[in-house]
Image (cartoon, rainbow, N blue to C red):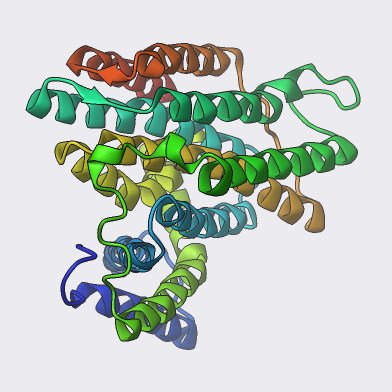
Length: 365
């Protein structure tokens, strides 16, 4: 979908279909079962759900045109975060206990974004333009905050003494949640007000189209964005049943559900990031990619922590040792990739190789 020109039909058809599907399924009391009718329902659900997520991102982009960069990028990440929290919370409330889902999803987002998405963007841009520029200062700010947030949420729980295992106590989880929100809030202040020039390359033309959206189109996109997000939240329960049945059918490990959730919420942003890289706007790609990782940890973890505490659910956050190694390697590689301010295809291939190792280790640990 493009944020320019007339609104595509899919931008309002998919949210309407999502609301209609939920209403019909609820009225008929229909629930997913591994049968012929269930498989048809699952296929329809997935198509409508993916289309609705794309519609939500489209409307966020339309609104972003009016408010300009980097606020537009921030709006996109916040919209995706709402979807992510809804999916995680719903699956956690399912019949099958999934105490590691939040951890698996957050880790999958970091690996998909920092290796898979970044690798594809750098490779696509490098093949077309040979080399591309990024803001070193802005990238360093992204990575410094991301390293701290990932360490205190995904690694530190393995080494606390108050509770055994990779768990935080209630007090520790509350403290870490507050710290992550404060740090993310300070980062947003830095990105959008204090040092916004760190995240924009002047020659990339960012913000040139800000304000082009008409008032009527803007209000319509605001309404449809809210409808799209509500529709995703309503269908999250149905999606969780399909995920559980699909994982059981192929004998997938528990982390498979986290990867599916991460792929669903990251797909629209990934399309936008890759398109920006092919237009020689790698800085926007990096803003979308690393920004989504920060939002996932800075906003999703505290939100899921509140849900887990309110519903008395166990929340496992600590990664296993092999995953910690992959995470540390990813951060070291990212610092080298963005440290010079110029990228080429070799950096992209290395990131994609690390992503391939991550996926392989999920199914063959």
